[in-house]
Length: 319
Length: 53
Image (cartoon, rainbow over all chains, first blue to last red; front, side, top):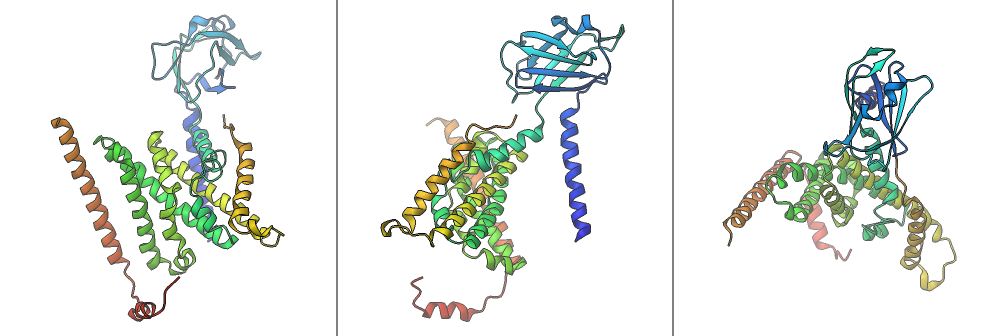
């Protein structure tokens, strides 16, 4: 068991290292790093000091967004750090940091020696994008509290903490399974055959298919877990988040890893919502609630308060 | 009718039919492979009970 844990941790670290190193690779030996800063500037870190006269010349740089090589972005100001290894380019208009930028330099001069020309790509770390999708789906755009989806299952299974957690975990597993299949079908079947107008039909079928598949396999492989899931597995079909996630990932043309993070965030967000709600409702049963508000009415009011609290996350994003 | 549209519709029918068939067979095989013994008496007892819930 311990051995396996260590194995998993090592694999995870390796994956993170690969993601980070992919983000930092600039493709030129003299340039160590290029990155966005504050959404308005691009910082280039050189391996050695560059000549000030060369670095301060605007004509030495050409910056454009990757899809539009014809539109050069006008450079407003160039700053050089005291040790002459860092150049900060600022621009008249803000940069669209979601888009990868290409930065071309003319022959770089370092202490009188030429270091050749460079074509550099500046982009946000892919890891950061994945994380922002995950946090976005889980907290900022929580499906229950900001989109009001999946409410029937939400109110139905949030009376006890144990049922709430069971439902949340079951839902997360099924939604990840279904979303990955939906992504593959959308990208490799529906889009090439121009059948995207059949999205909803196909996705509904996929959700019920994955529920049925998990049901069949789990019944045999792990009967104890199956018993613990019980009726919730079937309830997942009745949850509209399960259809919202595939539709969102199709609309935004998410790639595989992005779809995975979206589904995981949606599932865990639902789990968080259920857990919070069930904790509150367990306490409510002991509270002195007016008779006409007992049961569902007060639950709706509490859900509204939670939604208000989740408004605090709105507008947040990770740079 | 525009023949291109008819082609699209028929193509869609064929593709979706294939997907359905594929997953249907997959599920069927899975059900076969992961089949478990269910005591037939359980079903009978449930039949006899009132079953309001």
